[in-house]
Length: 557
Ligand code: FAD
Image (cartoon, rainbow, N blue to C red; front, top):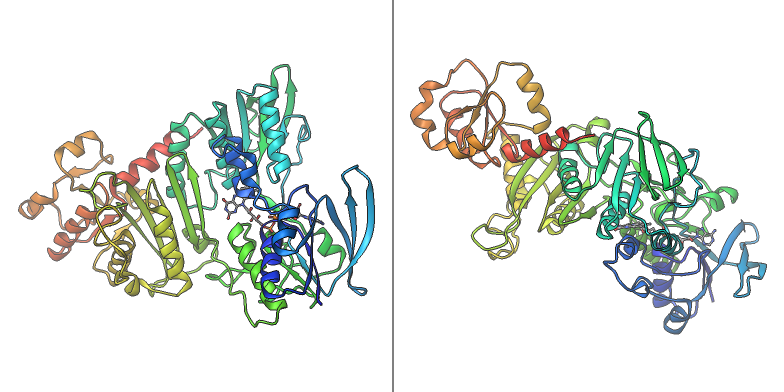
């Protein structure tokens, strides 16, 4: 009978324990969980604060008694693994019982699994411990925030940090009618994203009354007679009764470090391809570990629930004698911000640049389904490709159909599909769901044209630079109405349908940048001009992307 001890009873730990039991009816499986709950839905916490998930109990996927009844797994809550004696193969445990009495004892193991997660980073600034300043990781944190909002009748809040948790919390505070500021040290919300994708989020958050303070850090928090005051590094001050710190997480590695387990260069627990640490009897999974990034092959810290679950399951398989390997992670992610969905997978353009990985990008503005069927919503997909046409990463933003496109693209990266494959990928279609040419096919077609030279393009990031050279002719090929509603400064209007007849108006000695609303008419114009001997590039994403990026930057605080 194997004795298996698991530290941490949530995403990675609980999935490992359940899989272990399914593979081995005889193993003695014990989960040690420092908090009062096991197997809770941390990803749902922001939505209970906002009242979208009304019942708190819905967040409890299991309790110690349900784990015992169904799996015969012993889950010890309020129980902290204090230290590991690798020589004796035992863990020293401190348990607080229902009467608050403390008991310290040792637990022996044949295999130990560490799934301790990651700690929210708390900025080391004056006032960080004041009442009303919270992080959000556990059910207890969530209860604290909810109780505080209720007890103080909170009407205003400052969220520091605009990653996933910061954005989700801000949205949920707004749902509760709380006037919310977001402070973000980098120039954009969701620093993971490329800036033109984040621009949609900026506009959406501001449309919902959230005040954005990007490019600014919080330097101090003070108590005032009416609540809290957050000082920013430009000297400005924001009032809020509640402050949520959501500036990222750090792997919880204290226990591993004290046990002399090897850590990686990024500070996470080092593991091999079977999630084994430097001790063959100790495994580690989830937010606490470093994994291989499947695209760059570099080590990465990916604090997301999917990888934690899959790694937990894999460790159970390995301990049960199955020869499986963890291939690495893509960091596939998705975020809801009001009616907007934003998703990403693999490398962003920013990352590709930073890592000096040769790449090209393609932006496609398309529709979630056939436009003649009611309810179609525009979406933007960006692909990052190698010069040979291998997909390295993608991001997508819009109101509908974002999850499915990013999941197809994640599958494509995992399966190493290239632009050629993606153009011919046979995806399900009926008008309420997609178009005969799905936006994923469309993205691949565009990328393929870019690679072959059939479709020379300019991205929104490069447009400014190209225009600054001053040698380009900027050609708006939309119709007069669209032009009159707004265009790019300096653009000349020649609607695409008139282009063939008005070629004599276009000088041949100047490079041309054409644009339309989303890129499609621009593509047609590009083909006409190319075949008539002009040097031309099409602005990907067209005026709609240009307009969103311009709106976002003009409204920046
Ligand atoms: P956790 O699930 O954090 O579990 C670790 C547990 O170990 C903790 O309960 C901790 O108390 C316990 N522990 C630590 N040290 C000890 C010790 N020494 N002894 C005993 N117990 C110990 N991911 C997504 O993919 N999508 C989302 O939408 C999403 N939303 C999120 C929203 C919030 C508010 C939060 C906090 C996280 C969210 N995540 C999301 C991240 C996701 O929850 C984590 O990636 C995942 O839970 C990591 O699993 P884990 O097992 O490594 O750690």
